[in-house]
Image (cartoon, rainbow, N blue to C red; front, side, top):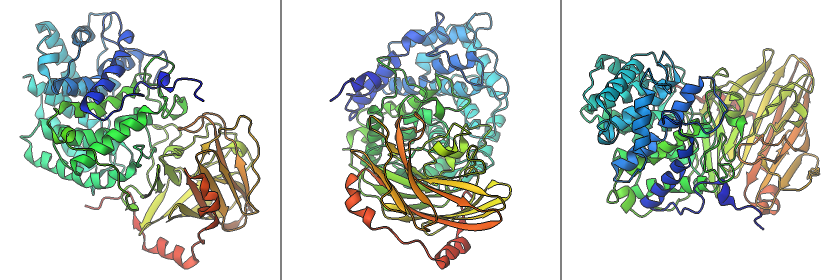
Amino acid sequence: MTIMDDARFSPMLGNPLKTRQDVQDAFTTMFKALVPAFSPGCARVRVDQAGAHFDVGAADVEGLIRPLWGIVPMVAGGGKFDYWHLYHTGITNGTDPDHEEYWGACTDYDQRLVEMAAIGFALALVPEHIWTPLSDMAKANLAEFLLTARNCHYHDCNWKYFRVLVDLGLKNVGVEYDANMTDQYLQDLDSYYLGDGFYGDGPDSRRMDYYVAWAFHFYGLVYARLCPEDQERQERYRERARMFAQHFQHWFADDGSCIPFGRSLIYRFASGSFWGACAFADEEVLPWGVIKGLFLRHLRWWAQQPVSRLDNGILSLGYAYPNAFVCENYNSPQSPYWAFKAFVVLALDESHPFWSTTEIQPSALPLAAQRIPGMVITHHPKNTVALMSGPCHLPSTVRFAAYKYNKMAYSTRYGFSIDANPYGFDGAALDSMIGFSEDGLQFSVRHETRAKMYKDCLYSTWSPYKDVEVETWLIPKGKWHIRVHKVSSARKLQTIEGGFAIANKMRIDRDIKPDCEDRVYTTNDDDFSGIVDLSRNRTPRICHPEANSNIMVPRTRVPQLVGAIEANSVVTFSCAVLAQPEPALLAGDWLKVPDSPSEDDLADIKALGQDCLQSIE
C-alpha cells in the first residue's frame, strides 16, 4: 500500500523520459520550481539558508547561473524559455557594482569563477538571447566582470576549463582577451591526461572520479564543437572521448543507475552528461541507440528517487534522498543544479540521430578490468559492482573521503555508507570496509592506497596506523567477490569488516542469527546480503547502523565479521561477500561459496600486477 504519493518527492516521477519533449518537459518542470527563489533584483537565487565554505553571495550566484546549463541548450535546440527577462535583469544588476545585488568582485580561486563558465557557454551558443538584449552599459559591465574573472588564478584541476569556456563566450561577442592565457590553461589540462580516455583531476593522478566524465570530457566536447578551428585539440578530445566511452559504459547498471563513489555526488544526473555531450559534439562514441539508452535510462532511474522535499520540486542536498552527510564543504543548497549539464542534449533537434534512433536496451556486459582507475567491474541484473583500489582525494577538500573513495567495493544498488560518528566503532556500518580500533570507540579505515592490477584482481597496500601495515587482495568470483587482508600490527586491535548494506524495512530492529559459525546473511523482500569468514578466525553478526548513514536508503542492515589482532603479530583475514537483488540466493549461490585463493595465487597477483592510476602514455 502506498501511504504517500512518491511523485510529491520527485520532480520527474511520472514523466516517461523517452522523447526529446519528455526531457525538455523535465527540465522546464525543475526550472519552474526555482522561480519563486529569485531575489527582487533577479541577480540571486537562494533555495535554502544553509551554506558552503564560500560567501553567501557566491552561493546565490550558483543558484542563478547553474540553470543556464539546461536553459542554453534547450533554447539553442529551438525550445521556448519564458524567463529570459529574469536573466537579463539579473545579469544587469549582478554585474553592476553600484547595485545592492552586485555579485561581488571575482578574486583568485573564487567560487564565482566556476559559475562564469556557464555564462561563457551561453555567450558562445545563444548570444542573441543573453547578450544582444542587454543595454550597452550592461554589456560593458558583464564584459568587465568576465574579463576580471578569467584573469584570476584558478585551482590546478578541472577548474582551468572555466577560463577556456569564458573565453569562448568573449570571443563570440567580440570582446578582446589574452589568448595566450587560454592556451596555457589548455596545455595544463592536457598534462593531466593519463591515457585510455582517463584524466587525473590535476597533477595528482589519484584524484579519479566522475569529474573525468562531467568535467574533462564534458568541457572538452563542448570545446570541440564550439572551437572547430582548433583542429588538433578538438580531434584529440574526440578521440579521448571515444576511448573513455568504452570504459564509462561499465559504470552504469542495466536499470540506469551508476556506481556512486567519489566527491560531489549531489550533482546526481550530471553523471549522464557525458553521453549528452557526446551527442552535442556529434560524436558517436558508441552506436547512437546505445548512447540514447544509457542517457535516458539514467534519467528514468533518477526520476524514481525522492530527491526533493514535499511538493517543492527543488533538488535537495543528498544523493538518492535528502542527506547532508554526502555533501562537501563546497556544496551550497544551490549546488545540485550542476545536474542540469545533462540537458546539453536538448541542443539537438528532433532529426539528430540521437533522438531519431530507437533506444537500444542494455545487453549483458562482460567483466571490465580498468587498470587506470583501479576498478574491476561486474554486471548483474539491477546491480553493477566495482571492486576498487587506488583513487583517493584530499581530506581537506572532500568530507569523509575514505568512505567515498577507499571502500573495497561500490554498488549501483547498495551505494555506500558514511560512518560520521568517530567514536562509534561498534555500531559503524563499515560496509565494504575493514575498520581497526584500539579502544573500541575510535577507529581507522583505508584512506589511501597504492594499488596494482593483475588480470581481474586488485592488490593494494595501506596503513590505518603508522605501525600497522595492511596488504589487501580483491578478487571477483561471479556474483561473489573475495577479500584477503594480511595485517602486520605492532599494537593490539579490534577489527570489523562489513559486506554490503541493504535496506532495513522492518518496523522493529531485531538480531538475525548467524547462518553458522563462519557466516551471516540478511534479507528483505528484494535483496540478499551475506558474508562468509573463509579464514575462520572471526565472528559473524548483523549490524544496524545509524539512520541516514547510507546514501541510497535511510535505514540499513549490514552483515559483518568481528575479529581481533594481538600486538606484534601478523594475521590474515579472508572472506567471501555476496549481495544481489535476489532473495532466492539463499537456496542457490549462498550454498556455493568460492574457495579462498592459495598463497601462490596471492603472490602472483602481488608480483605481476601493474600500477593503477599511472599514465600509460
